[in-house]
Length: 227
Ligand code: 5RP
Image (cartoon, helix red, strand yellow):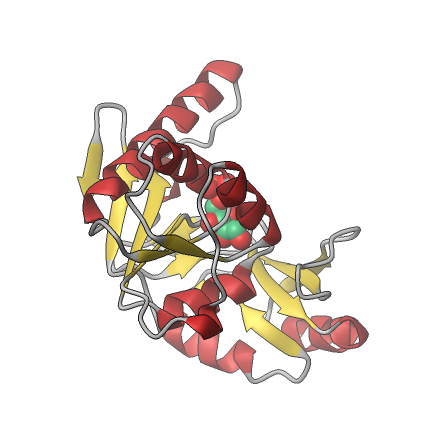
């Protein structure tokens, strides 16, 4: 797949994201509490929810930005600790394989996203088709770290052939830093997720393989494929 660069290509990528987001509405049982992710594809989902008042009872949000957008759309946001059941989570991704493993965290919300994915019975991932890949890793892998451990973790990552770049100026909603790991070709996503998660100081690895998506909705030039 080509990466978008011209204004026309960017506009088309947005249209594909919108198609995937709107297709996700069909997965929502009316009246549920919905887990809502973060990012530009999810923005289309929130816009679509705003046009369907009352479709969901409330949302659990994965970021301060999504909480603000949900509230602006008239949707109440509840704490994950206050609900017993989360039937569905809808979120985007930075890369996805046909086996539903994902790289997430381009927007820096990976920790809360992983928590909601773990809590949800079903995870529907919405992407445009440029994000569907054979092998994860061309998109730098985001890793959220405790700030004082940033260099310690970066050195440990470099020992594993990854070039860790500090996302300078960015602080996560949890007060942590993000390292983006370049140069990976991820052959065994669950194993790498496990291994990197064991490095002291790592809060969350942006690989979603132990808990992959259940469904991938892929926006294309003409519609949406469900994988
Ligand atoms: C945020 C994420 C997003 O889902 C991911 O970055 C995709 O974003 P977008 O829909 O803007 O392309 O993981 O932490």
